[in-house]
Image (cartoon, rainbow, N blue to C red; front, top):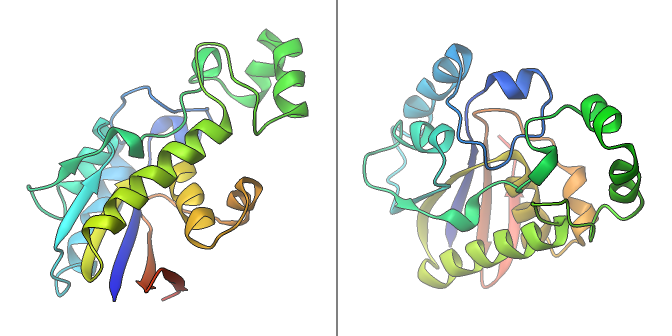
Length: 190
């Protein structure tokens, strides 16, 4: 059996402000640093066989709590929000009202200018996890990534449609464990 640990990075100032933060490479704030320091304790008795990490600073710094040897995996990046990057929903409505309406009308397939669609991100994230599962059928594997990615991965593993990703709440510096055996995923709540 494979124990897959999906770990969200610690808090950032953009998380507090509810900004659409995707590919912008920012650090965690002090609260985020404190949050991820607790991950060492959580994993102290879990022998991780591999750690896969989004290649952005906030996830890399989170992963360092688990060990120095990890695999940078750009496919585990959050959505590229393009011109909506680092804006709040209210700012998007104010600055791009027509584009926001298009996005809301077709949020799965709408491609944000200079960004990507929800479907593109879902497919990219699903491929990243499929690649990981092809390499690891047993053991303990950590994936350090972002809110949207964890939601996408959970929907993918639970064989849900893209819209199913919105059913998962994932806090900063949280750990979501999924046990996978013979291609069947079971969420473990602790």
